[in-house]
Length: 308
Image 1 (cartoon, one colour):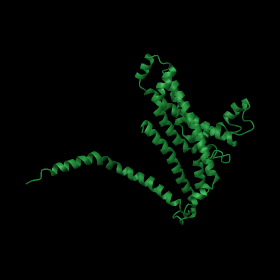
Image 2: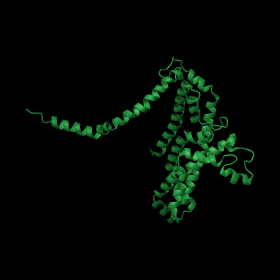
Image 3: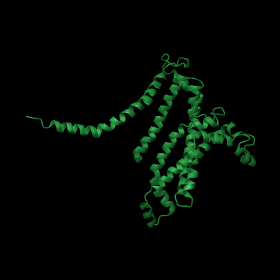
Image 4: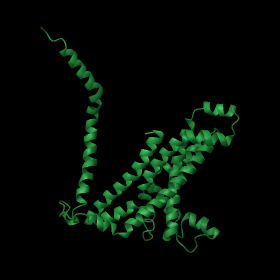
């Protein structure tokens, strides 16, 4: 008596594998590479944060010293000042970029002559390399021969007795202003695409019902764009948190530590002071802080809007 069910079972198993397992089989090489270049270094960094490290013995770690690296890190006052500076830059520049980019997109959300040319010119700062932007602004604001300093500010009697990058408050304000100038066009471009994708039927219904322009904007446009706005805010907060190249070129964290972000602090701690154990502890602390704050924001966005 022959078994007639075995070929059908084999076919069923093969179909199930193709439907469920085959995509993971194709993704396996990429996942293995990500594990090797991402997870393994991170685990190694956690292990090294509890050991004594010497740059003269990079080939092997030293003895286990417990939480001494973390204690030394928290005893470093510049660590907390860099966190404060980074938070101030992030929570000042990103809301400004969001508001200005949204306002520009709202104004551009209509047809007018040479609109494409105007949009192209507007987004130029975003497509330039941050290093090039930092060098350009450092030349423009150089004292006393910078183009803007000599031809604009000095003509109105501004900054005659002070250097912008030599004053703590002015240097920090300049960093924020340059970041806003660079990334507002990015917000503008994305919001402009968002305006273009809004459905037209709700607007037609609101116009028929006699809604004013302000009512349409506040009760229709804003709710439709709110998930979009929150996603852009989330992305820019993450990106601004890692600011490095602009500050490094403009001020190198100075004067003093007035503009030293956590990225500049990590660079100095590792490659100038060679405090490798404390640097490993720093990376772990920043990861936990970053993961906690932005993980919480991600969960809230997912619960409320389900946009990820």
